[in-house]
Image (cartoon, rainbow, N blue to C red; front, side):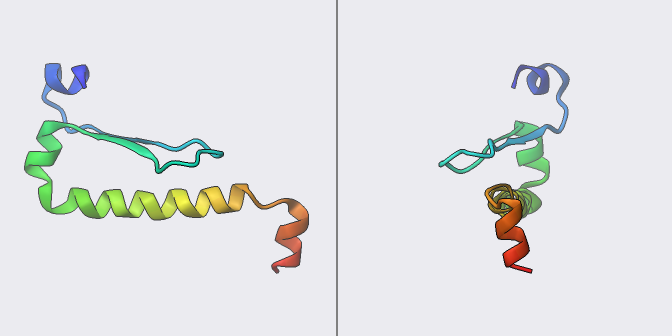
Length: 69
């Protein structure tokens, strides 16, 4: 947040831990929210889908992956 305030940059950050039980966290700078308002919700939704798929894939053991092929 400090970096975006000091520089006025567009900053978007997401993080998700593989074993997390909660949704991913994200930060959107004031500038990106102001200038990219139409797109930021779509971007957040896309990351939600990506992290859901990655989390599901991470939970798969090699044996389970082979049985789903």
